[in-house]
Length: 174
Image (cartoon, rainbow, N blue to C red; front, side, top):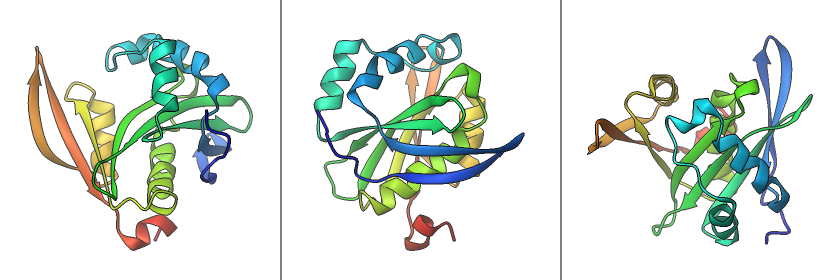
């Protein structure tokens, strides 16, 4: 179990009124909530939820990082999962899930995750996969500068692979 946080980043987000989100390393005690979030109807179409035991095992793995998205007024509003690559500087952006009651904060959370990867992990590249029918996610990834580098057929769906090279100035928002 992790006892230290690598880093905490904050961003201000225009969300109706101005709201504050904080991205921080997840706590072991939050895993049950993460499992419940994965069961929400908007998530089940795009992700394969894991059991509590699977999350506990992943959480204990030093190469897998859970980040919690916290909204100042409500607490836990979502999470991200990152996997450190075999090559230094390579990070897989495995999952983002925003609680169904707090949609609209994903883009800011991804930007904060990119800063975390650059500053706390020394990442040079982030990659992810996304089903082509997850149009909102595809749009956001493209808007944030992710570029497709591969596609695979998964049953009736296409799985697209995107990547983004992190530049030195990406970490400071310039």
